[in-house]
Image 1: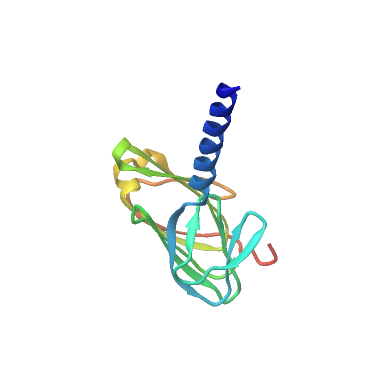
Image 2: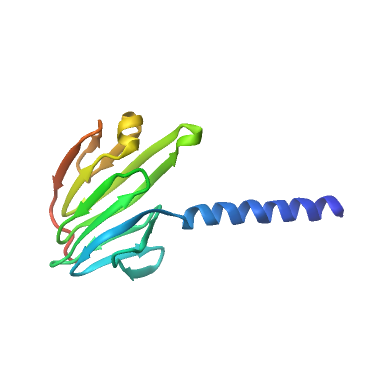
Amino acid sequence: MFLSAVVGVGLGFLWGAVAHAQDTAIGIVKISEGEVALLRSDAVIPADAGIGVNLHDRLRTGANGSVGVTLDDGTLISLGPNSLFEFTEYEYVPQRGAFGFLGSVLGGTMLYSSGKIGKLAPERTKIHTPISVIAVRGTRFAVRLPSTAGN
């Protein structure tokens, strides 16, 4: 009985740590203009400057929207009008040497500028688009895809 209680409490703490990790911000919205929404689970949240961005969040801009995000490692992501971007994977734990970033541009325009992950682990930095995968090697680039109007 005692062992079951200890295991149950331990699993509760472990589950709490995993849930907390998913709710921990990986970056912050620095600039937001016009219609910009943060899609988190089933919620649609106005993506005003200062709001944290979590793993698996999506950023969606409207016809007059633009947004700039800075991730914890210094990576910069800017989206123009009618864009949709998902923070698919992100790991930045320098103490363990654990680095990785995968983002998905699903439509619109995006400007990307590498942070520390792109410099320390360029092979672990990628941007997916509906038609290609961009392997980042410590650089800046822009992507333009058909807009996500209506999505």
